[in-house]
Amino acid sequence: MKINELKPGDCVTQELDNSTVAFEVVAIRQIGRRFLVTFRSALGIASASYQGDAYISLAH
Image 1 (cartoon, one colour):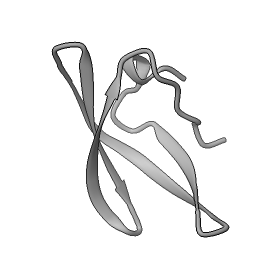
Image 2 (spheres, helix red, strand yellow; image 1 turned 180 degrees about the horizontal axis):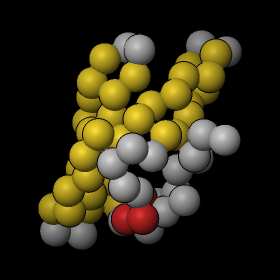
Image 3 (cartoon, rainbow, N blue to C red; image 1 turned 180 degrees about the vertical axis):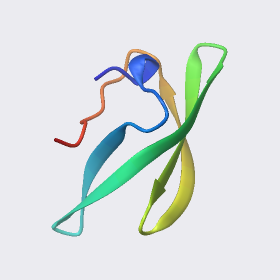
Image 4 (cartoon, rainbow, N blue to C red; image 1 turned 30 degrees about the horizontal axis):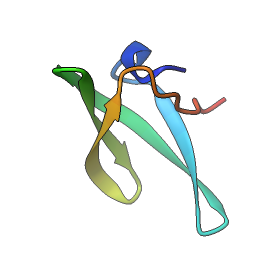
């Protein structure tokens, strides 16, 4: 899914140290041409900045 299509409540996954970690989108905010996405997981809360046309894997 494209970053600019994410909504709060969406879940994405990432491979970390041979494990799959699920992240819930808490907030998404457009800043110019980029999007600041705040995620929550078992590891805590963190934010990352992406271009709006970047892709991210949704959890199934």
